[in-house]
Amino acid sequence: MDREGKWDKVIQGYGGPILRERKIKIQRMPFIVPEAVVSQAHQLPAEVLVAIDEWVWKRVRACKRVHITDPEGTDIRYTNHDSYWNNTRDVYRRDHVEKHYSANVPYGETYLPGHIWGRPPFMIPQEDGEGVIKGTMNHIAPYPRMEMTLKNSVITEIKGGGIFGEKLRLLMGETAGTQYSGFNQPGIMQWWEASIGTSPKIHRPRENYATGFNCGLYERMRAGIIHIGFGTIISSDTERADAKDGKLVGHWHVHLYFPTYIAEDVNGEDVTIIEHGRLKALDDPDVRALASKFGDPDVLLREDWIPAIPGLNMAGDYNKHYAQDPYSYTMMELDLCRDYHPLFQKMVAGGRDPVTNGCC
Image 1 (cartoon, rainbow, N blue to C red):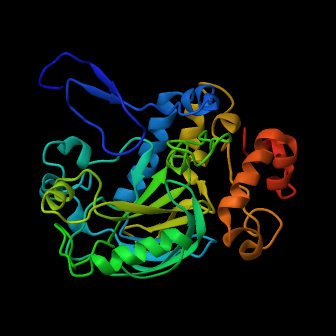
Image 2: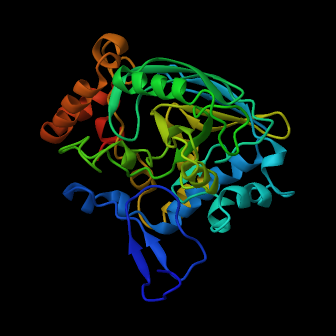
Image 3: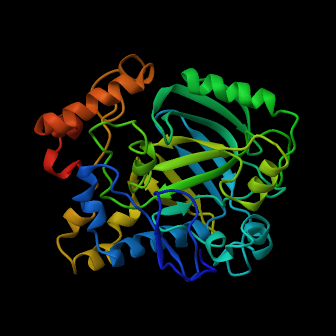
């Protein structure tokens, strides 16, 4: 289509790579349900969104080590290797990018707007990610709490997760002897993504949730949410080559809703990029000053949606009331959020003013 020159823009989905430096452009279509049409997420000034993205990207690029934790149990550490980057750490190293995105280098060398790479979307021989990843949500729908052990950026064990975890364990066994392009060890269960959402106005759709494209994919873009990705690298040259060779391909996720992302800078000082789910860019004086050009920064930079999870940010027992059956709880929560919104606001406020706590 780009070569034909007949079209200016393609409206397509709201996830995955985008074309850069092409005549034809890809525009996301986030209006998956009626409530999204009037969402503040699509009215926030682009200048503010870019400033938030740049604030996060600057600090991710500069750091040497990263530590991510989350109250659902995730605790991982990894090195932000110099060999990921060019000499000035402005963009990813060209040879890595061309190996994975040879036809779309401008996309592969930097961040995706609203979706900041907390680690690069490729692997090198020095990968050293270690720890544990725990969660109850992927891009599709909630699942019973799952735990994955990580060593040298390879997932070595998967516990729990209900049907989702069961399917992953079967796939892990089936591909254990398969060598994938760009991976250091055999097997499909390799960790390559820890992406950071940056828009404070994203709200999980409430009606008919977990149906088709009305799923967890959209909400991952909310500021402060991290989604962990593992499997083959989406739409990359290496994934396409492996698929043509008949290898099983695909990638999956775990969402972190209240993460803390601490980056160690070149001086050995800790820089907090996310704290308990709050993206620190939203509190930065320069970002707030810019937002004030368009309205009240307290309003513009306030999260319009924060999930209510028992034992984490509201009363209740995390395991008993949520983690064993997150799907049933989440559907009930969304009904409450839609039909009894003032009550929902009080429920997640935790003693604070519910007007300032988030959820539009």
